[in-house]
Image 1 (cartoon, rainbow, N blue to C red):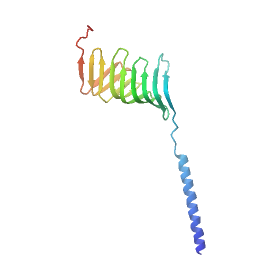
Image 2: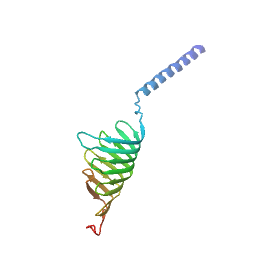
Image 3: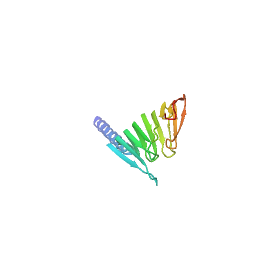
Image 4: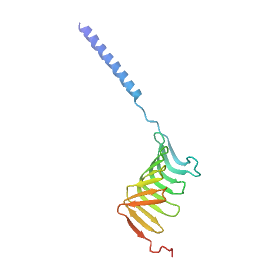
Length: 176
């Protein structure tokens, strides 16, 4: 009788082990694994959408492909179709949505000599708007403006400052 109980107990343990193993294997097969990303160094990307004459050029010391169309950029310089230059240390770009999210320090330089210094930026290339909820300093030939937040419109051609805005106007606007 003990022999039958022992055989039954061993059989139950084996059956339980097989069922548990099958459920674990099935769970692993159903769990989606993120795609393996790729990495490149010292890269240049030319992006041109639609019928645009000029697109955007991205240079980066390191590019890491994430999921879908998301890429991480380290040590980057972006030149847009209007020759506005964005230089920063870290950003994520979703080319499907046209969204660039910069974390850390950023310098934006325009062809007419204006320069903005800020931390962090979200740029929606589809709407041609960008914003930062961090302090910003903008220098131009007309003077310097400091603010707590900034919004850029029309591909950085127009700027809206808000929160603690201080301006220092150049003393000689005539250039003499």
